[in-house]
Image (cartoon, rainbow, N blue to C red):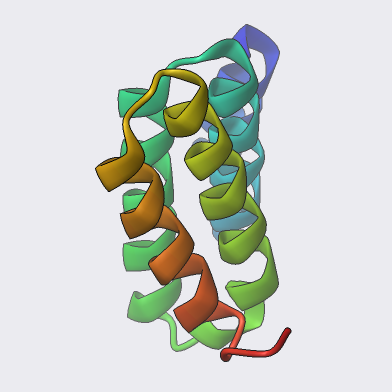
Length: 99
């Protein structure tokens, strides 16, 4: 997770700003694996805002759904069914309701 934070930080210093949202989502995935739910949520929110700012928010719908499903699993492991249900509903929205 620390390495992924560094990647996001370094990209912020370059002209490669288009790569930052994807790397934020990679950081969110690492945070989920580490059990850092708050950081994962913050990184996803920032990535979505960055993508919306340059009109690319639809390009990562599948990645968002994967992260939300992983977060739902983490919530279930912590016995928080309400939060898990919210994450699964969000994932369903990003996945377009496809089964």
